[in-house]
Image (cartoon, rainbow, N blue to C red; front, side):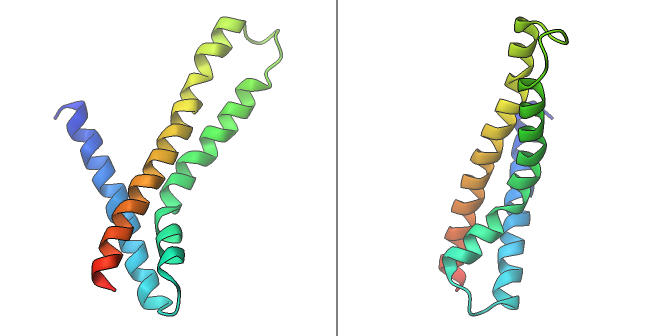
Length: 106
């Protein structure tokens, strides 16, 4: 399978987990508003990706100059930056998918 295929599988799994969580919340908390269900349903997986990315970003940004050169730290700071951007993109995709399915099933 190509990289695009794996990426699609991971994205569909993440969206599926978020949708499943939202439907579980609908059954557990029927009085909650749609906005609350969408936000809580879409958040868990991006938070799991965001937490280590932010930690790594702060860790690399606060390294003393004796432990890394400017070029090395500049290259390594891109890794958590892409993790943060991926978490935000995953949150938006999960939120949109959950909103579309909740609109039709509520």
